[in-house]
Image (cartoon, rainbow, N blue to C red):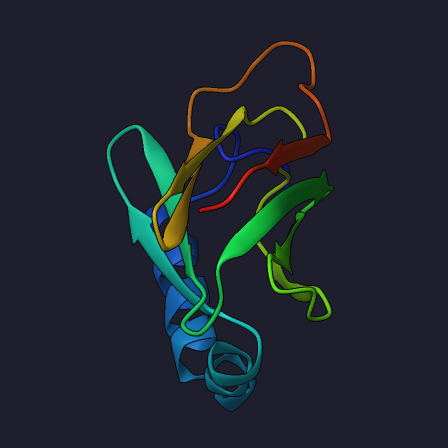
Length: 128
């Protein structure tokens, strides 16, 4: 699969979402790391990450090919929490924006592709 704007179809996205939602490992990671929800809007795919029992001190996003890794460092000094999402398309030219909120983060993966790849790592520090 190439970029989202190439040969990626709505049916592929729906199949991928169904598989992701029904995967028991997804539920286990929601409980042991942090909860992740996915949304599809007109302009972007939105990943919402919600840690349930700690304050976030640092957030690192890394995109590699079809994988988006989310690392969250708790403020209390606990070990980092991490989730990786394997998308059914390359993220190389999809701009990614991080929006930290109080108690959760939103990650917008824009559907409009850039001509050149953007940064592969996004880092944000502060208490969220």
